[in-house]
Image 1 (cartoon, helix red, strand yellow):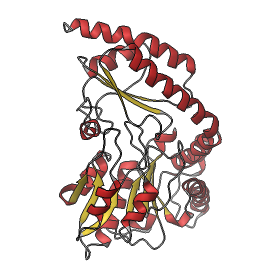
Image 2: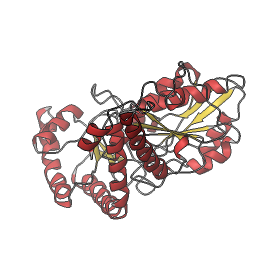
Image 3: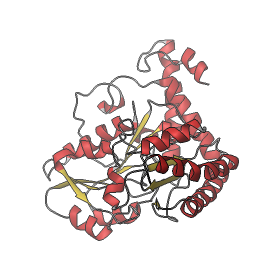
Length: 350
């Protein structure tokens, strides 16, 4: 499909020539598929170059539209760095408990304060998997728009309701990188912060990457068709990982809500272990895992999510199961991990 779209969908979809009309048809079909999966109308869904771009465009646009009310952005302490950076000095941070869930009473009190333009709360955490109470948060927000970063959950969990603006990223459900989704409910006022153009209502400059948008739609359809079986397996396998990691390794902390969580994500931290050394050793055994913050993993900085939860931040490993993950891989990971941790600890004299 991708190769076919490269051949047929290369043209500018706003042009009236044959190639432009073909590109428009392909784009409209892909948008309809993606909109249906998110639960919005096609004209409520805008395409961006990434999930980060969707967050920046959406959060700044809805905040700018409410500047007469105020400029404050209330958000949880465990939001993705794109939300934190976009909110900037206008951000009002609300803490979370030790599983990473926001206190709704505190969140609601912060949202009701004077000068609040928008509230931001992720559907589920991208590092520890803990779900946030989106529907209940929407109720306490009242007339304040609720911005939801759903990148971690789209394709893996039910889409929450009650939000005004929602963002997602195709690579999170197995689609290509470079395709982000920005959904804006009708009736939600937005004011794009860059000059309007004829595409995507000015929320994403330039015309969309049509071949990759088609690939993103196909990948999401495939993921949703397999969701029931995959989520059942992933939930059980993460449960087993949580139990075996905790039982097999001394001084380890498995974090996040053990029940009310995404089915495919797990994070744990090992005392007296360097996260980079652990990731490198596991990579040598054929396991691709991450450490540090999911937003800044290239620098291996300590996770702001774990710090906000008040849990161990070093010796951190983050696992995300994919559609090709097998139980044999889960079992082998649990078998080799304790020996790797013992070896790394021994090397530093622990």
